[in-house]
Length: 324
View (tube, rainbow, N blue to C red):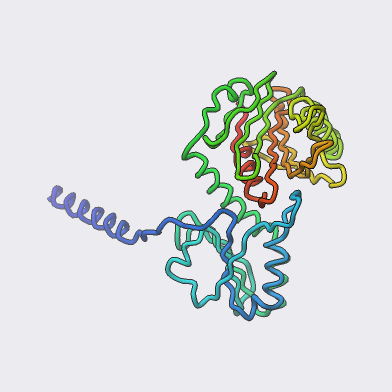
């Protein structure tokens, strides 16, 4: 009798497990170019105030680039075509008139990985207000998803960073297409060629300082990068060197990477005495444990090419850094 009961219990458990497994829904791999955002909104809204709010806030210009480039490439489709492969885009912003107001966030609704944000409003005015109020969070969610995707792609083929990691006491992921252009006194300059120029990554450390304000920290970052660039980054003619463009105000703010406080600074650089310039992004890590400031900076020189995605690649590399 006892054995019969055990058999019945086992059968019920097995049936329950099979039933649960059968309910699992297969989701395909998401698709889409990096920083390409699918906007699902009907044409009448896209051509009016709602579309203007999306373009002005979600597709806003990125600070720190020499030409106007948007945060995302917006691709609009009406709700009627949002099905099948169209729903596989990695990032989706869905905007619609509804009987309720609100912003909802979804993870992997149709594909993996995927982030979809739905903005519902009872009127066009309400939708515009919701977009304005939630723009920063919407951008952050989509950008973080794109950052993870870029880092995933980088991991497919990695550069051997053993020498850098041993010298600077860090871990990081760098694409195999980069090479070390300079290695001297705890200073590393890595670069890769593009069709018209080069993408550069600088890694080095200096003794720590106690900064009382973000302005003092920001000023020190600019002074430090100019000093290091003058010493290590020569221009095309003897005596030329890279420096920060004084006509463009640097934008600095605190962020956190791998549990370390970091000052992120974006601005433009130029070469004194030469017609060379471009954008840079500087991440200065406050490494309290090792009493130092670890600096990771990416700068781009690609005449006649868009620069957003190159800066984003550098940002993705730098944000993989873990201090040992």
